[in-house]
Image 1 (cartoon, rainbow, N blue to C red):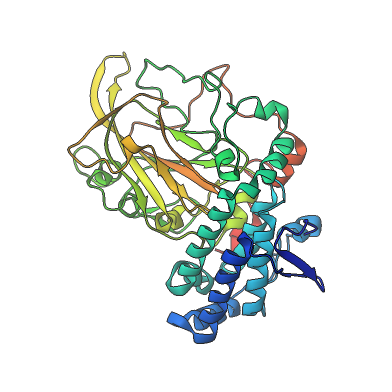
Image 2 (cartoon, rainbow, N blue to C red):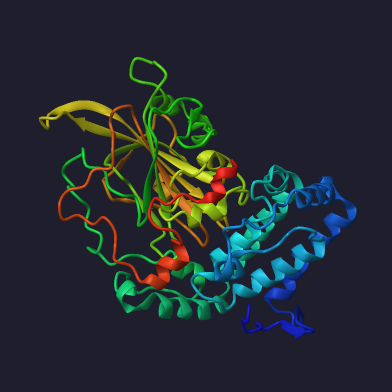
Length: 433
């Protein structure tokens, strides 16, 4: 990738190998790679079998992925061996010491071709020893981003983001990359809309918003797809799930789900979309770290996440918050109370979905007061999103007022890296599903 070789590595014959110094990379990465090789050699918990079957199912490069984009994000995993995987993890960790803002997504996408439209590849990533491997690799990446040597990566990101973007953030202790990644906004740069009007819902973070689906049921089919999103699973069996899958009379056919996808270079704290009370919360639901069969389409679909298969997110590491909030009728008079759900989902590379202490594991029967815009928690490095859940008939559409922001006139270079197709353009890769 043309990156400088970090301390503790030597470059020999075009490959990266360990040096003599007992640096971070020696003591952590070397052990991880040795474990992966041992698991394969011993077929621990079927690891060798699962990996080999996954590789047999790898699909060829989609024909529409051509030229510079193919060179940037495609990796051919057909005929790959365990050495291919180990070398890829080594290079990926090397990126963590000195590459820029966008290359992290490139590595995630390159890795994701293992399970692109490949059920065996997905099983390898989310089950058995393969899931253990990816949990350990995610932990390894987190430790790397907590290492003080990651500060040089911080400086590179600051330079790439530029003074216009960085002007929004409060200076802080950015001695490690993870401290920088959860940087705080300056007071007042994200004013909360209509703070005294409980009917106005605000974005929980800086994000790309998509209406996912309305008329949620226990097994709702996503429009333009033939897959389901199980709200009860997403909310880890919460008693409040029924408020989003049924109407107030208990009839099937419920509310609305909206996705709020965070880009890697934006603000990674999330806030309350409504005010009222937190009546239930769970900050640490174990789940997979990788395994999205269509990750290339999530990032390449123009409007990021548009028409995406959201079923996989109910298997990912996540948390949830249930807000009890007052309703108003069309005249502005009180109209009872209801519920809004917030589900922070840690996607590829995310090992932590962190809540502030007061919102951790709020049990049914407890209540924590919250104002619209209050910080709930943060993500550390990786991909991530929030899913918002609303009761039936309460959030019929995304509605904006004149003068409110609907987007930005972006730098074409950034747009090309994140939005390689025009808004609402459908990826031909989805046609095989």
